[in-house]
Length: 113
Image 1 (cartoon, one colour):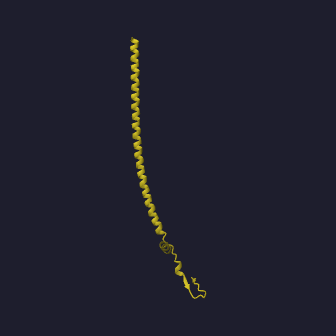
Image 2 (image 1 turned 120 degrees about the vertical axis):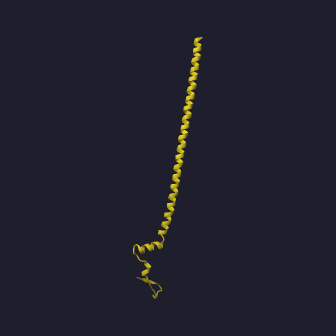
């Protein structure tokens, strides 16, 4: 009879140990999942901040591109090029020294410098 009681007690102890092990494992798993959720939330928040910073940089670069395109168009205009050639490079306009001569019998015009 004692042996049967001892075996029942042992079975209850084993069953209790299994329950404690299961609950402990389940608690550790829930804590690990919670920690993973916090890590991922922080990671996504950081990624969102990085995206916001990159979008601002993109907008700044697009504004610079527009400004430089306007500057290129302004500098490339013929009147600006001619003005810089005369004022900075001391060149003269090609048409300022051309003299047109008329009176040739074939009807063509000859230019002389």
